[in-house]
Amino acid sequence: MTEPLHLDAVGQAELLRSKKISPTELVDLAIAAVERVNPRLNAVIHPRFERARSEARSVTTASTDGIAQPGGEFAGVPIVVKDLNCQIAGEPYHLGTRFLKARKFTATHDSYLYERLRRAGFITIGRTNVPEFGSTITTESLAYGPARNPWNTDHSTGGSSGGSAATVASGCVAVGHANDGGGSIRIPASECGLVGLKPSKGRVSLGPAIGESWIGGVVEGCVTRSVRDTAAVMDVLSGYEAGDPNTPPPPQRPYMSEVGADTGTLRVGLLSGPLLPGGLDHPDARESVAATGRLLESMGHHVETAHPPALNDPAFGDMFLAIVIAHIANDVAALEKQFGVTLTTDDIEPGNHLMAQFGNATNVVTYLGAVNWVQAWTRDVVSWWLPRDGKSGFDILVTPTLAGPPPKIGELSGDDSTERIREIMQYTAQFNMTGQPAISLPIHTSKDGLPMGVQFVGAPYREDVLIRLAAQIESAAPWASRQPAVRA
Image (cartoon, rainbow, N blue to C red; front, side, top):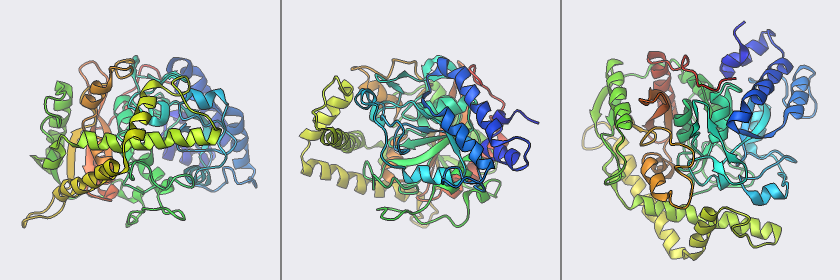
């Protein structure tokens, strides 16, 4: 029998169904793996080992309490969930803040996302490390300290799903819950050598606590080691829940059906250089796109240097920031109202405290002006994928996921890090605002041997095309044999 933790989640589920391993045995293996590597990675911050073991036993004894019901397609498969937007009633939920950590705060309800994971049979063995409020792209909160990259522990895991990415990359579990408001699925996937799909706006419900966040830019998903796992988990998570404000058209068939399906000949545009004027133009990032172009051409796709001109609009960064700071101000105000306090820099990190102050100082007209600007700009961006002037639109845009290799811990934190963050995250937040699906695939390595993802952006609501292409690339340029230094 292949070492169970080396398998992806679909493979683990098959192993469980064939009774070659029991849920209890598999969960125990995952827990032991976390116990071995977590002292070096600081990825899992809230273990729930005993409850996970209890849930694993219930899989084999026809549970009646609604937890880990037998028969789900992933019954008995261990996962981790991020300590942001995936609540489990009665369990710690701290959003990366010292304020909630000091109060030992616990969630009051299950999120719809967790209910879907639970119905599918997944067993959560722990909650993972996040930056405070998920507001940056490195996981280095003052509350819990930095999560460390299993490829090189001096380097960042990315953020804000860095703890989940480190846990999956190190082989403890095959799937980690993740979410993405400006790159927080794709960036950790890139830095940790994983598959990270940002689904379309509204594809996965944020309920019941939230309708939408960051004008729909925040989406839920996962990080995985295989394309088929990403497809299978998206089949579990996707779909309307009562009262959701935005739900995209449903896929024509399950996403798992797209794995191995024919892509046809796709029209692909390659981004030839940085989007920001004078922005970071790292040779490894440039080569990642060039090499991907050569690979796609060898697979029979039509490739040309092209991208939506609207992506070069320098106003985007300020408009995106105006939306984000307003929502951070609202998050801080909600905590203050809930607990009857005024939060200071002793409670939340100085950067978030400052953004909340800026958000509070932004008047309604300015905020709505930013929203209107982004929505008009979105029409210009998305038109590149649509037929125009008698020509077919593009199917795929290829960009670096990040404008360079994984930075070292500390490089993107601190009071002077704002410009460095803007430079390295040039390629991801745009597609949160347009609502398009985008996936980071681990097909490039820096000259120092660190993972560097390549981003593929699809037309609106075309996760199916992205999954077809990603599976084709995985077959042509497999990454499963590459292993990090810290491995369970």
